[in-house]
Image 1 (cartoon, rainbow, N blue to C red):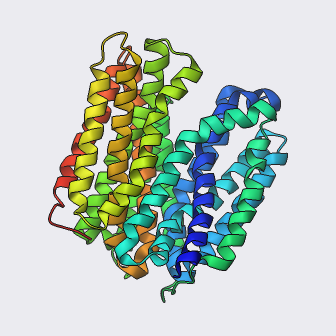
Image 2 (cartoon, one colour; image 1 turned 45 degrees about the vertical axis):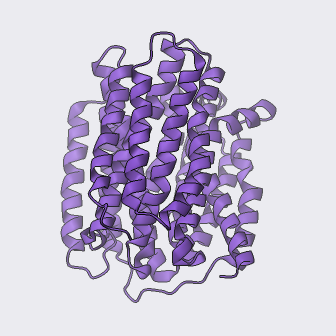
Length: 443
């Protein structure tokens, strides 16, 4: 692809990915306002968030598989179009039912964008520069994650909550226009879309996410265990079905590739650690150290900013040096930052807090881009969509597990800040150990 077209294509992907990631957390800030405006309870308002997450979780793999069949560009454009229309529906929603339905459709659109973005990057950049493209996407994800609450606060300071969704419409239309002229047209696989597997995947993963969430929020254990048991049965049926298929929707064939399997396993543990830390640290800064909500947000900022600065550099390094070395080093740096935070004195000065946050961000940035490159680069080119779907699913599953276990620690251990941080560090230790096993494998 010519350099000029490559830049426009990456801009389209960056804008759409930024919106999809930001909409995952931008609404959290506005939940109290939405609850008051719609006349609903705080517990009911959580469905505005859960509907989006659930839609993404159950459709990432099916849509990535569909991208292999009909073309990544088509899935991307359809997903982005649905995201724009759903944002408009969110803007005019006047009840919990309509807003939740619109958010679910918005999540479906976001899944369409997120499921194929890594596959598109593989066709935008030559193989020798794949890490550069993956690093840029990692930078956008980090910035969108870190800036979400800030952007939400800025919008809410000048307008009502519907503007949180309305802002997506002009940005989405711009990205759609850029995509229509610049995204690559990729080849198509010959096999048909497996609708039965897609349904089994949606039921299995959906119930699994709901079961983990039920455990985290103290819902009747019998309900949570039933959800977990049914999810396990459905997933077993799904896996047995996939083993007989040459190009399965759940890419068990890719999991037989050692570098791919190790990268997916590392990613799951690393994102469990990240989510555990992201939930725990605001409680530490606000409840233990006594900082205001605004000060807490500012003190958390060095983490995503360090990821944004490190990720592009790490992506370029991944094109030249072994992924196992870079990922393991990054995870050990992040592990060091978490342990140092857990060992801080009762009222530490600002500089060690900022330093530890920065260390965690540098470590995660050094890990994320090379690991994502390993996931995409180790899969056959015609299976890039499925590889990207597994990448997103591993991230989402890891975050869900991390959130659930953190809630469990808080429920079992009074003032469980330190145990939760050490648990996050433990996940990083496991991730680093897995990553070290691939030192001899460079995708």
